[in-house]
Length: 133
Image (tube, rainbow, N blue to C red; front, top):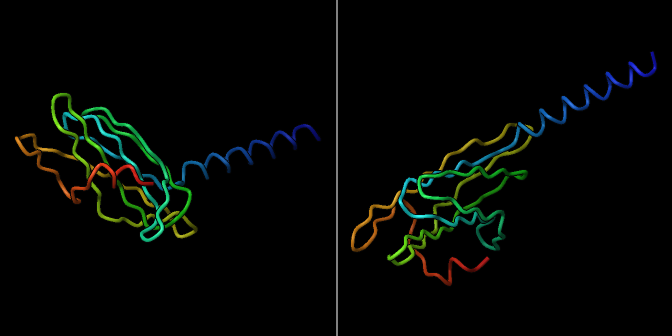
């Protein structure tokens, strides 16, 4: 009987942990372009810190998870062989991950290729600005 109780307790604890892992804020980043992208997700607005860096293939996607609420933004580098890289800073976004709930967001990057590539959203930045953490 004692072993059955321990097994039941362990099972309930495991279910609780699994539920907590699934109930986490997340951002799906979709790359809707021919370029491969490196995306940095930065936390903060004044003193910013790097939250996560991902590389996304052309027409691919990645999911980034957040354990803390706060304000974040992205910096991206889009590369296509034979073309100049494109650097961009995205608009700030708010992430909630607390007792009130959690954010589930999708961010889609698009670049219209031409002699001067056209970015969707955000503003163009320099390589040195992208490289800062």
